[in-house]
Amino acid sequence: MENHHQIKDGWFFETCPMWPGMGFSLQIEQVLYSKRSKFQQIDVYQTRNHGKMLALDGIIQLTEFDEFAYQEMLAHVPLFAHPCPKTVLVIGGGDGGILREVCRHDCVTDIDFCEIDEDVIKVSKQFLPSLACGFDDPRIKVHIGDGCAFVLEKKSRYDVIIVDSSDPIGPGDVLFKKPFYKGLKAALKPDGIVATQGESIFLHQEWVIRLAKITKELFIKQGYSCIMIPTYPGGNIGICLGSLGPELTKPARPVSDGVQDRLKYYSPGIHEASFILPHFAKKMLRDI
Ligand code: SPM
Image (cartoon, rainbow, N blue to C red; front, side):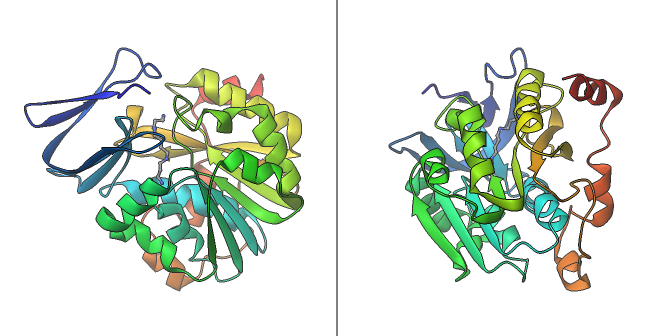
């Protein structure tokens, strides 16, 4: 797999064929880790102003500066849309950030976590403890292996499934295809909800449309929620959601003061607002 970045004069510069003709740079102070795993190049940097940064195959996965926006929304939008999620599956996100957020829900009793690259978990535990703390909860069972194969073995088991994938240009590409989504649907309980990394409405319209079409066809309700996040290309990313029952665009349960106080991005208000899309995106997804 190609490495999509360069380091020059103390700057990390990310480019990628998925967002051609543009690039994103962060000033770095130190390379903390740089090694190829069985699946991908894993790099951790100390940036100048954005805390530590994790990159896979040269694509920014997170910075400590703004990771909360993505992790909170990808976890809490589907979990709060569900009236009482007990069993949850998280696929991908070896950094542990999504798990950290899922564990804030006391009603959740069992969390299966499946990650293909064990080295991402190890690196996160070593360098990103504020995310890897997500692994400390006894409700979590860690499975190392292919997320798609894992899902295809499970039937009517989960209330919520969250897919925290990298982009469809590396080991994550299978997670953007219809057979995987069929597997997700089969692995959900009859009123289950699925939420997947949904790319950018500005930069990846082809992918957004593809995922929206698949979820529209397979699920009773379908939605796209938009997240602001400065260190992903274009400053935004989305969540593609499918539901077999519950309404997606509103929380089905109150957020306790104790939980809300610990969150930095998610709130009932932003949950609802995130589904209100710019006019071009609304039209694009309405017409599919
Ligand atoms: N838990 C954080 C892992 C991040 N997973 C998603 C990363 C996506 C990176 N690409 C962003 C560009 C997409 N438009």
